[in-house]
Each structure stands twice: as C-alpha cells, then as structure tokens.
Picture 1 (cartoon, rainbow, N blue to C red):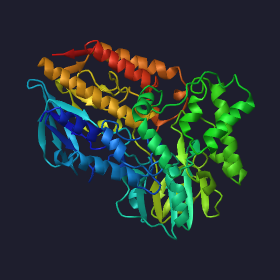
Picture 2: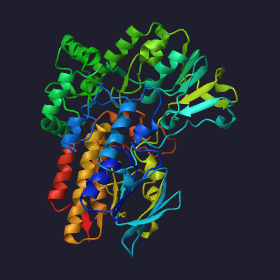
Picture 3: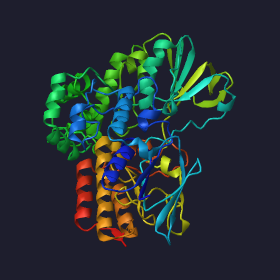
Picture 4: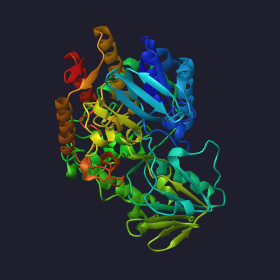
Length: 529
C-alpha cells in the first residue's frame, strides 16, 4: 500500500477519504467492530461530546454539512455514531477498512524505506507512510488496586461499554471516577439503581450542559454562513470561536463579572470554554482564575443540600480549566437523592476489590456491579501499546521514556513517514478535536502530495527542530496555570508515566499559523530525501 492508517475514528475516516481521493492506495485497520472511534467504544448511558453539534463535524464536503441535520445542542453518542456510519457509507470508505483488527507492530525497514505493519490477525502490510489515527482518549485504564479478578458481580469500563443495554434496576452499583464519563453516567445509573455509591478521588468542575433541541432556524443560520463560521473556529484559541477578550477579570466589578459567569452557567447557549475566554488572564493568573473557581463552588453549594457532601464535591486543589471542565446534566442534583452516597477517596482510599464489592480504608461496600469511569492513558497511551520501531530498530516507547518528543506534535525524529494525528505537542485535547483533526489530515495530505511531486521517498523531522518544538511546548505550558493540576494533560493519572505537559497550550489558531509557516518555508525543520 501507499499508506496504512491505524484507526477508523474521525481522523482515520478523513485520512482515508482525503488520501484515496489523491490517488493513493490506503488500508485502514480498526480494532473495533465498526467505525467511529471514540463514539464506537464509549456507549455508556449519557455519553455525549462537549462541543456543540454544529461545530463537531466534518467541514471538507459542503453537501455533507448541509444535508446532515443535528437535533441537539450537544449530540449524544448514538447520533454521533450514526453520523460516522453515514460518512463511511456516503463516501464508500468501508471497502478499505478492516474491522476487528488491532495493529500490534509497525517497523521501519531502512533499506526499502517502507514500514512493515503487522496485526493481531496475522496481516503483514508494507507502506511508504503510516498515519497513527489512534485517538487521544482511546487507551482505557483501570485503577491500580488489587482484586478485580475476584469480584463475583458484573463490572464495566465506560470506555469499553457493551453493545447490549445494561440494566442496573434494583441493584447496588458503585461508580469509580468522577471525570467526564462519570459525570455523564452517574445521574442515569441513579435512576435505575436501588443504591448508588460514587467513589471520588478528585472533584471536578462540572458546568450544566443546558442541553436542548436545536432551533431549526439556528441550524439554517449557521449552515448559511458555514464558511465564515468554520474559519473563525480555525483561528480561535480552542477551536471554538468566542468574542476576543479585552480586559482582565480583575479589571471589572464583581457585579459585571458575576453577570458574565451567570450567562455561561444558566444561559441556553452556554459552553465551558466561555468561562475561560471571557477575560484575558483566566488561564494565566491564579487570582483571576480564582474568581470563576469560587463562582462554580458557590453554585455547587447552592445545588447540593448536604453541606458536607457539597464541600466534598467542590474542587479546591486545581484552578478552573486546568483539567478539561466537564459538561453535565443533573450531576450535582443527583447527590440530593436518598439512595446516592459519595465516598471521598482522598480520606478513605480504596485498598482492594473484594469478591462482594469495594473495600476502602474505612469499610467494605457491598456491590452487585461496578462501573469504572477511570479514564484513559491519554494522548500517548494508544501509541505506546503498539510496538513502533524507527531507524536502527529504536522503539518509540524507548525514545519517549523521559516524555514524548515531537515536531509539531505530528512527526518524530528517527521515524520517517510516520504521522501522529493530534499527537503530543499539538493542541489536541485542549481543542475542538474536529478542527484539529481536519487541520492535521490536510497538512499530512499536502506533505505527501509535495513528496510525490518531488519524487522524494522520506520525510523526517530533524533532531534540532524536534528539540526546539518540545522545549517551546514546555515553555508555553509554564506560562499558564495548566501544570498546577494533576491531570491527564500531564500524565498524572498513570503511575510511572513521565510528568510532561502533553498538549500544546498556545492555541489552535497560532498553532495552525506555525504549521502553515513551516510548509511555506519548504517544510522547514524536516529532512526530505
């Protein structure tokens, strides 16, 4: 093949469409039973994206964006899966996608200047280029506690939810984790379970989704102006356009600031990013950030009846936005229900999973089912689970033993013609992923077209460019409050993972400008041979 693409989620589908349209032969391998990536695997009750429907979709085909009708402000998993199914069928992508096939090895053969890709089904394919479209949040992880194999009840991970519906009616259920997946699933499990126990290690800032059906007139308005709408998102900080802030949060009165926060808490068109971009210094000044953190903690205290439970749910150990804020529906209200209990794992950590439930340092909780909403080995996890070897047989995991090093988050020195879509060192999880994915795929497609035009065989980041970019990513992160949180942005949720800030915090628009500049300068920082 010309290209092997690993993964058939949003990035893999677009890579296949774009590169096949350029006349290349492409083979996509996908571990799941269908396309959709994140939205194939995360089938748990309440799963939905935290980006608005009109912004979380493909922009490459005007007819597609006009024809597809979105129904809710934040689309649920079921609709997102239908959308990606539709895209695969509409553009006849399935004929080049091999499902239920996990790539286990990708080795660069230097004499042939090609990659040898092997799968768990025995496939061996060579390709000039390999595109890792493996996703930032696809390597699910369980908590590091012993005893799961002894548990006699049922257990699930939100990132690998079964296809068939799960019924918790009348059961004693434990949910471990209160990140985004936990925030989604907890209120819905509470509707079924006889008793629900939530095990929380770190409280998160949860913003009300205020989800609602999309006004048809609003949808028509956006579609009539989609080109300008998309461009504004591409030039924005987070891939979602907001009016440009002109003042510090500390330059306005308490009343003015509260009115702004109210708009982005109670308003039907609210979004968590709105609380970060309304003032110039929300992610750089702790004093400014404290204004919104206090605001959210006050809302929690208003909603939750029990003051002690409210205090346990109030985040105090990290600034607002330094972990991706969660979007929830009736999340805090759920803790007012008499059959819902909250366990603070900071005070009473889990010591083991027993045959009948979960034991903390204080007591054993008897459970019929356990749901692990414990997240992912983010950004690098899916890549590290594949044996990727570049020049001289160097393993990517060995090169990244002290933390990932990339150029622009998309290429790695010593690994020619390997592209990591939304990889470490790119905006990735700090952005609207739809915008970042399309930008990367289009950039890679342009690279391959340029190489073909030149008759070149290899495209490889230089050690110098990789080192300078990696240092720049770290320097920019230190200008912000992001490193103040023990987040997956830093790999803090995975024991032993190097503590390195993984995404690029300089903003989607500035990052795009840098990538365009590199290309305009003849792919400065890359060796083309």
